[in-house]
Length: 165
Image (cartoon, rainbow, N blue to C red; front, side, top):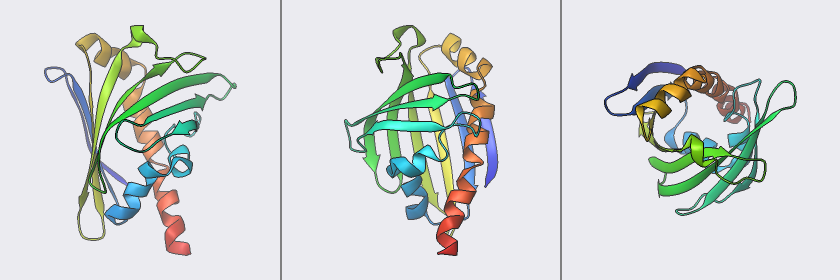
């Protein structure tokens, strides 16, 4: 996996990450569509994700938690707002409390994931839109960029399993 670029855009209230994988677009789509595969990369290695609910349909919801090195849990939720398999996924995303309810004071973000077929490789562009500059700055300060890079660094091993079958 090669991270092509990351960009924080304060004017557009967005964060953009572009990466490429040495796998076809259908295969890369499955790392989003299958919750068991998603669990293997969504959180950074020291904060693995567990999806408790996952309805990968427009209007569907996901509930997950990431478990830290000391056993602490950070919960989150998604609301799938659009699917155009295998090219585009959009979802709203936010933090959740211990009951899985959205934490309103953290706000929510809107993610757009676009997959582009590069003839045996796939370019994935992830754009996260924020409600405010304060929210964007808070997420960046919390380690969003580094966390995404670490999480995506786990995808190659997952994709390589198909090559060994």
